[in-house]
Amino acid sequence: MAPTIHKEENFSTTNLKWKMTLVQPSGDLSAKIKEELREPANPADIDRDIGIIREWLKTQPHLPKDMDDARLRTFLRGCKFSMERVKAKLDMYYTMRNAVPEFFTDRDVNRPEMGEVLNVVHMPPLPGLTPSGCRVVMLRGIDKEIGTPNVIESMKLTLMIGDVRLAEEAVGVAGDVYIMDASVASPTHFAKFTPTLVKKFLICVQEAYPVKLKEVHVINVSPIVDTIVNFVKPFLKEKIRERIHIHSSMEDLYKYVPKEMLPSEYGGNAGSIKDLNEQWRCKLGEYTAWFKEQEASKANETLRPGAPKTVDELFGMDGTFRQLTID
Image 1: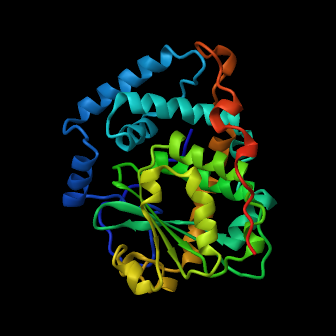
Image 2 (image 1 turned 90 degrees about the vertical axis):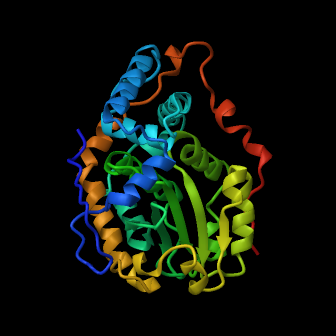
Protein backbone atom coordinates (compact mmCIF):
# COMPACT_ATOMS: atom_id res chain seq x y z
CA MET A 1 0.00 0.00 0.00
CA ALA A 2 1.34 3.43 -0.94
CA PRO A 3 2.12 6.00 1.79
CA THR A 4 -0.52 8.51 2.82
CA ILE A 5 -0.87 11.47 0.45
CA HIS A 6 -0.15 14.84 2.04
CA LYS A 7 -2.14 17.86 0.94
CA GLU A 8 -1.70 21.55 1.54
CA GLU A 9 -3.89 24.26 0.06
CA ASN A 10 -1.88 27.39 0.84
CA PHE A 11 1.58 28.05 -0.54
CA SER A 12 3.99 30.97 -0.45
CA THR A 13 7.13 30.98 -2.57
CA THR A 14 8.90 32.84 0.23
CA ASN A 15 8.50 29.92 2.66
CA LEU A 16 11.65 27.85 2.31
CA LYS A 17 10.72 25.13 4.82
CA TRP A 18 8.37 22.99 2.76
CA LYS A 19 5.98 20.80 4.73
CA MET A 20 5.39 18.62 1.71
CA THR A 21 6.94 17.67 -1.60
CA LEU A 22 4.20 18.79 -3.99
CA VAL A 23 1.98 21.79 -3.31
CA GLN A 24 -1.50 21.19 -4.70
CA PRO A 25 -3.48 23.84 -6.61
CA SER A 26 -6.49 25.47 -5.01
CA GLY A 27 -9.01 28.24 -5.67
CA ASP A 28 -9.08 29.85 -9.11
CA LEU A 29 -6.00 27.95 -10.31
CA SER A 30 -7.59 24.62 -9.47
CA ALA A 31 -10.77 25.66 -11.27
CA LYS A 32 -8.73 26.72 -14.33
CA ILE A 33 -6.91 23.38 -14.40
CA LYS A 34 -10.13 21.39 -14.07
CA GLU A 35 -11.61 23.29 -17.00
CA GLU A 36 -8.54 22.59 -19.16
CA LEU A 37 -8.59 18.89 -18.22
CA ARG A 38 -12.35 18.68 -18.86
CA GLU A 39 -12.89 17.38 -15.35
CA PRO A 40 -16.54 16.80 -14.42
CA ALA A 41 -17.85 19.24 -11.84
CA ASN A 42 -19.58 16.46 -9.91
CA PRO A 43 -17.11 14.14 -8.09
CA ALA A 44 -19.69 11.36 -8.46
CA ASP A 45 -19.08 11.45 -12.22
CA ILE A 46 -15.38 10.78 -11.64
CA ASP A 47 -16.24 7.87 -9.36
CA ARG A 48 -18.50 6.57 -12.11
CA ASP A 49 -15.65 6.78 -14.63
CA ILE A 50 -13.34 4.93 -12.24
CA GLY A 51 -15.98 2.22 -11.96
CA ILE A 52 -16.17 1.95 -15.75
CA ILE A 53 -12.38 1.53 -15.96
CA ARG A 54 -12.47 -1.18 -13.32
CA GLU A 55 -15.18 -3.03 -15.22
CA TRP A 56 -13.07 -2.78 -18.38
CA LEU A 57 -10.02 -4.14 -16.54
CA LYS A 58 -12.06 -7.20 -15.60
CA THR A 59 -12.40 -7.95 -19.32
CA GLN A 60 -8.60 -7.75 -19.87
CA PRO A 61 -7.14 -11.06 -18.62
CA HIS A 62 -3.57 -9.94 -19.32
CA LEU A 63 -3.71 -6.80 -17.11
CA PRO A 64 -3.42 -6.51 -13.31
CA LYS A 65 -6.42 -5.17 -11.36
CA ASP A 66 -4.48 -3.40 -8.59
CA MET A 67 -4.56 0.25 -9.72
CA ASP A 68 -5.84 2.38 -6.83
CA ASP A 69 -8.41 5.17 -7.19
CA ALA A 70 -5.87 8.00 -6.73
CA ARG A 71 -3.81 6.84 -9.69
CA LEU A 72 -6.86 6.17 -11.82
CA ARG A 73 -7.96 9.77 -11.23
CA THR A 74 -4.55 10.96 -12.44
CA PHE A 75 -4.88 8.80 -15.56
CA LEU A 76 -8.33 10.28 -16.20
CA ARG A 77 -7.06 13.84 -15.79
CA GLY A 78 -3.96 13.24 -17.91
CA CYS A 79 -6.16 11.84 -20.68
CA LYS A 80 -8.77 14.63 -20.36
CA PHE A 81 -11.34 12.05 -19.27
CA SER A 82 -11.23 10.19 -22.58
CA MET A 83 -12.01 6.58 -21.72
CA GLU A 84 -10.30 5.22 -24.84
CA ARG A 85 -7.10 7.11 -24.09
CA VAL A 86 -7.14 5.95 -20.47
CA LYS A 87 -7.52 2.33 -21.58
CA ALA A 88 -4.62 2.68 -24.04
CA LYS A 89 -2.38 4.30 -21.42
CA LEU A 90 -3.17 1.69 -18.77
CA ASP A 91 -2.46 -1.12 -21.21
CA MET A 92 0.92 0.42 -22.06
CA TYR A 93 1.64 1.20 -18.39
CA TYR A 94 1.52 -2.50 -17.54
CA THR A 95 2.95 -3.65 -20.87
CA MET A 96 6.12 -1.59 -20.38
CA ARG A 97 6.72 -3.25 -17.02
CA ASN A 98 6.88 -6.57 -18.80
CA ALA A 99 8.74 -5.35 -21.92
CA VAL A 100 11.42 -3.24 -20.18
CA PRO A 101 12.11 -4.96 -16.84
CA GLU A 102 15.39 -3.06 -16.46
CA PHE A 103 13.36 0.10 -15.73
CA PHE A 104 10.92 -1.50 -13.28
CA THR A 105 12.90 -3.84 -11.01
CA ASP A 106 15.20 -3.19 -8.03
CA ARG A 107 13.56 0.20 -7.47
CA ASP A 108 15.13 0.96 -4.10
CA VAL A 109 16.82 4.32 -3.45
CA ASN A 110 18.88 2.67 -0.69
CA ARG A 111 20.75 0.59 -3.27
CA PRO A 112 24.27 2.00 -3.82
CA GLU A 113 23.81 2.20 -7.60
CA MET A 114 20.68 4.31 -7.25
CA GLY A 115 22.06 6.39 -4.40
CA GLU A 116 25.07 7.27 -6.56
CA VAL A 117 22.80 8.72 -9.25
CA LEU A 118 21.01 10.95 -6.74
CA ASN A 119 24.38 12.09 -5.40
CA VAL A 120 25.56 13.41 -8.76
CA VAL A 121 22.30 14.25 -10.57
CA HIS A 122 19.57 16.51 -9.26
CA MET A 123 16.13 15.77 -10.75
CA PRO A 124 13.44 17.09 -8.41
CA PRO A 125 9.95 18.22 -9.36
CA LEU A 126 9.58 21.66 -7.78
CA PRO A 127 7.00 22.28 -5.03
CA GLY A 128 5.06 25.10 -6.67
CA LEU A 129 3.13 25.53 -9.89
CA THR A 130 3.38 27.94 -12.81
CA PRO A 131 0.57 30.49 -13.32
CA SER A 132 -0.93 28.11 -15.88
CA GLY A 133 -0.95 25.25 -13.36
CA CYS A 134 2.04 23.25 -14.60
CA ARG A 135 4.51 21.29 -12.49
CA VAL A 136 8.17 22.16 -13.15
CA VAL A 137 10.85 19.46 -13.05
CA MET A 138 14.55 20.37 -12.87
CA LEU A 139 17.40 18.22 -14.18
CA ARG A 140 21.10 18.95 -13.78
CA GLY A 141 24.43 17.25 -13.16
CA ILE A 142 26.54 18.68 -10.35
CA ASP A 143 30.08 18.39 -11.70
CA LYS A 144 31.60 18.18 -15.17
CA GLU A 145 34.46 16.04 -13.89
CA ILE A 146 32.25 13.33 -12.37
CA GLY A 147 31.84 10.27 -14.57
CA THR A 148 28.51 9.35 -16.13
CA PRO A 149 26.23 7.66 -13.60
CA ASN A 150 24.42 4.47 -14.55
CA VAL A 151 22.04 5.52 -17.34
CA ILE A 152 19.46 2.81 -16.66
CA GLU A 153 19.37 3.72 -12.97
CA SER A 154 18.88 7.37 -13.91
CA MET A 155 15.97 6.56 -16.19
CA LYS A 156 14.55 4.21 -13.56
CA LEU A 157 14.59 7.03 -11.00
CA THR A 158 12.72 9.33 -13.37
CA LEU A 159 9.99 6.74 -13.82
CA MET A 160 9.86 6.12 -10.06
CA ILE A 161 9.17 9.81 -9.52
CA GLY A 162 6.47 9.52 -12.17
CA ASP A 163 4.85 6.67 -10.25
CA VAL A 164 4.87 8.64 -7.00
CA ARG A 165 3.30 11.60 -8.73
CA LEU A 166 0.49 9.42 -10.06
CA ALA A 167 -0.65 9.14 -6.46
CA GLU A 168 0.45 12.45 -4.99
CA GLU A 169 -0.85 14.88 -7.63
CA ALA A 170 -4.09 14.63 -5.69
CA VAL A 171 -5.88 17.59 -7.29
CA GLY A 172 -4.39 17.46 -10.79
CA VAL A 173 -2.03 19.73 -12.71
CA ALA A 174 -2.28 21.16 -16.21
CA GLY A 175 0.94 19.56 -17.41
CA ASP A 176 4.69 19.29 -16.95
CA VAL A 177 7.49 21.73 -17.75
CA TYR A 178 11.05 20.38 -17.81
CA ILE A 179 14.13 22.55 -17.29
CA MET A 180 17.44 20.93 -18.21
CA ASP A 181 20.63 22.63 -17.08
CA ALA A 182 23.37 21.70 -19.56
CA SER A 183 26.19 23.58 -17.77
CA VAL A 184 28.18 20.42 -16.98
CA ALA A 185 27.17 18.41 -20.05
CA SER A 186 30.11 16.81 -21.83
CA PRO A 187 30.57 14.25 -24.61
CA THR A 188 31.66 11.69 -22.01
CA HIS A 189 28.40 12.01 -20.11
CA PHE A 190 26.31 11.09 -23.14
CA ALA A 191 28.47 8.30 -24.54
CA LYS A 192 26.37 5.68 -22.72
CA PHE A 193 23.04 6.90 -24.13
CA THR A 194 22.31 4.32 -26.83
CA PRO A 195 19.49 4.88 -29.32
CA THR A 196 17.71 1.72 -28.10
CA LEU A 197 17.78 2.83 -24.48
CA VAL A 198 16.61 6.36 -25.25
CA LYS A 199 13.80 5.06 -27.44
CA LYS A 200 12.57 2.62 -24.77
CA PHE A 201 12.64 5.31 -22.11
CA LEU A 202 10.81 7.92 -24.17
CA ILE A 203 8.14 5.44 -25.26
CA CYS A 204 7.58 4.67 -21.58
CA VAL A 205 7.24 8.36 -20.76
CA GLN A 206 5.08 9.30 -23.75
CA GLU A 207 2.87 6.24 -24.07
CA ALA A 208 2.61 4.66 -20.61
CA TYR A 209 2.21 7.65 -18.29
CA PRO A 210 -0.59 10.25 -18.35
CA VAL A 211 1.91 13.09 -18.78
CA LYS A 212 1.06 16.28 -20.65
CA LEU A 213 4.47 17.70 -21.53
CA LYS A 214 3.91 21.41 -22.14
CA GLU A 215 7.47 22.74 -22.51
CA VAL A 216 11.13 21.69 -22.38
CA HIS A 217 13.69 24.38 -21.59
CA VAL A 218 17.45 23.95 -21.94
CA ILE A 219 19.60 26.46 -20.07
CA ASN A 220 23.34 27.10 -19.70
CA VAL A 221 23.86 25.68 -23.16
CA SER A 222 27.16 24.42 -24.53
CA PRO A 223 28.25 23.50 -28.08
CA ILE A 224 27.09 19.88 -27.67
CA VAL A 225 23.48 20.76 -26.83
CA ASP A 226 22.31 20.98 -30.43
CA THR A 227 23.80 17.56 -31.15
CA ILE A 228 22.04 16.02 -28.14
CA VAL A 229 18.69 17.64 -28.96
CA ASN A 230 18.88 16.48 -32.58
CA PHE A 231 19.73 12.96 -31.38
CA VAL A 232 16.67 12.81 -29.12
CA LYS A 233 14.15 14.49 -31.45
CA PRO A 234 13.40 11.43 -33.65
CA PHE A 235 12.07 9.63 -30.56
CA LEU A 236 9.73 12.47 -29.58
CA LYS A 237 6.23 13.16 -30.79
CA GLU A 238 6.09 16.06 -33.23
CA LYS A 239 4.12 18.31 -30.87
CA ILE A 240 6.76 17.80 -28.18
CA ARG A 241 9.62 18.53 -30.58
CA GLU A 242 8.00 21.89 -31.22
CA ARG A 243 7.98 22.70 -27.49
CA ILE A 244 11.75 22.56 -26.95
CA HIS A 245 13.26 25.96 -26.12
CA ILE A 246 17.00 26.67 -25.99
CA HIS A 247 17.85 29.69 -23.81
CA SER A 248 20.90 31.89 -23.98
CA SER A 249 20.17 33.56 -20.64
CA MET A 250 18.20 33.03 -17.43
CA GLU A 251 16.20 36.15 -18.17
CA ASP A 252 14.90 34.42 -21.27
CA LEU A 253 13.80 31.42 -19.17
CA TYR A 254 11.96 33.71 -16.73
CA LYS A 255 9.61 34.67 -19.58
CA TYR A 256 8.25 31.12 -19.38
CA VAL A 257 8.79 30.07 -15.76
CA PRO A 258 8.43 32.59 -12.89
CA LYS A 259 11.79 33.30 -11.32
CA GLU A 260 10.45 33.10 -7.77
CA MET A 261 9.34 29.46 -8.04
CA LEU A 262 12.80 28.24 -9.08
CA PRO A 263 15.53 26.93 -6.74
CA SER A 264 17.85 29.50 -5.16
CA GLU A 265 20.69 28.53 -7.53
CA TYR A 266 18.55 29.93 -10.36
CA GLY A 267 17.48 33.12 -8.60
CA GLY A 268 14.29 31.79 -7.05
CA ASN A 269 12.77 31.24 -3.62
CA ALA A 270 12.18 27.48 -3.67
CA GLY A 271 15.25 26.68 -1.60
CA SER A 272 18.33 24.79 -2.67
CA ILE A 273 17.96 22.29 -5.50
CA LYS A 274 20.17 19.94 -3.49
CA ASP A 275 17.72 20.10 -0.57
CA LEU A 276 14.77 19.52 -2.92
CA ASN A 277 16.59 16.53 -4.39
CA GLU A 278 17.11 15.13 -0.89
CA GLN A 279 13.41 15.58 -0.13
CA TRP A 280 12.68 13.43 -3.15
CA ARG A 281 15.23 10.83 -2.06
CA CYS A 282 13.29 10.58 1.22
CA LYS A 283 9.95 10.55 -0.58
CA LEU A 284 11.05 7.69 -2.83
CA GLY A 285 12.34 5.86 0.23
CA GLU A 286 8.84 5.98 1.73
CA TYR A 287 7.61 4.02 -1.28
CA THR A 288 10.28 1.28 -1.15
CA ALA A 289 7.87 -1.47 -0.06
CA TRP A 290 5.31 -0.36 -2.64
CA PHE A 291 7.89 -0.38 -5.44
CA LYS A 292 8.85 -3.94 -4.44
CA GLU A 293 5.21 -5.08 -4.52
CA GLN A 294 4.77 -3.53 -7.95
CA GLU A 295 7.44 -5.71 -9.56
CA ALA A 296 4.80 -8.42 -9.99
CA SER A 297 2.25 -5.96 -11.39
CA LYS A 298 2.77 -6.22 -15.14
CA ALA A 299 1.09 -7.45 -18.29
CA ASN A 300 0.98 -11.18 -18.94
CA GLU A 301 1.36 -11.45 -22.70
CA THR A 302 0.38 -15.13 -22.72
CA LEU A 303 -3.11 -14.05 -21.61
CA ARG A 304 -3.53 -11.06 -23.94
CA PRO A 305 -6.55 -11.41 -26.24
CA GLY A 306 -5.26 -11.80 -29.78
CA ALA A 307 -1.52 -11.74 -30.47
CA PRO A 308 0.95 -10.86 -27.69
CA LYS A 309 2.92 -7.63 -28.02
CA THR A 310 6.57 -8.26 -28.84
CA VAL A 311 9.61 -6.10 -28.18
CA ASP A 312 10.07 -5.55 -31.93
CA GLU A 313 6.46 -4.42 -32.23
CA LEU A 314 6.81 -2.00 -29.33
CA PHE A 315 10.24 -0.56 -30.08
CA GLY A 316 11.12 -1.38 -33.68
CA MET A 317 14.39 -2.79 -34.95
CA ASP A 318 17.45 -1.67 -32.98
CA GLY A 319 19.61 -1.17 -36.05
CA THR A 320 17.53 1.60 -37.56
CA PHE A 321 18.90 4.35 -35.32
CA ARG A 322 22.37 5.77 -35.20
CA GLN A 323 24.56 5.92 -32.12
CA LEU A 324 25.02 9.32 -30.47
CA THR A 325 28.40 10.65 -31.58
CA ILE A 326 29.79 13.89 -30.18
CA ASP A 327 33.15 15.22 -31.26
